[in-house]
Image (cartoon, rainbow, N blue to C red; front, side):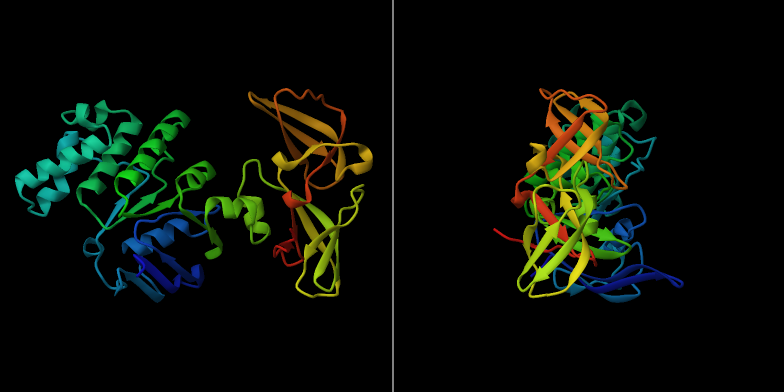
Length: 363
């Protein structure tokens, strides 16, 4: 039985539909991350699970019980928001204990839960401090601790690290990863726009776009086998290069040709179609390598060189609307204006039909 099950879930504000016919099962103990561009509906969907937003249609089940009309406080869910929302006049200990005191939990039980949560999040030295005496990362750990002490079945995180600077985001992300290991039976759903958070924390990622699910899968699955153009362009940093190409379908093969390429046609599975169409060829910056002009998949002029310490990113003008990015280690030296020929293994290429659906990659 799934810990959380969403069946044909929809949400509208007047005539504007923000969540459209979502079907998703989340297993007990899973860490699932919702990602997508701003306005895609990921936070709204999280708030619907929490009970903070109503459901217009569809069924939400928690541990097999329909929860559409169950009050938020009775759903067994704890939520961590991007704002810390700590009581400024209370100590860390009092902030952690507050919800338990309201629920009339025994004083000894409160103390045991608070100290256990504080130990998990390395907050023991700060229990007597007020929020104003803490760093941003420490405050967010207190906010997470308030969820832990409730011993909820499900944790919901709504962009909890977005208010932290880069160094604190890394440190707090590590704490959340450790928390995941310490609470293996607890289901966690996490909303973020940060791909590093999604790729490093998630058991599975749900990619949302305009209120719909584009793809669900393990991080490596989304990276290596995006289902469509949207996922291909969204997952990965730098993003996948997407170039117009021509597709010639012949039975169970599609032959992809990139204009001006010296590598010839590349075969993909096509499902038995026999038509021709325009398509898109995708290749990740890190998959490109130097080649001779005769064997090149593409050749371009270096417009910009970004030196990022261990890696160098090239921006190449290949005659398309967008530059092509190529990623090399720091030992490679390039200058603006260089003519560079690049290729990639066929197994590293992606092809998409005119509708944006991925074509099957042949072994």
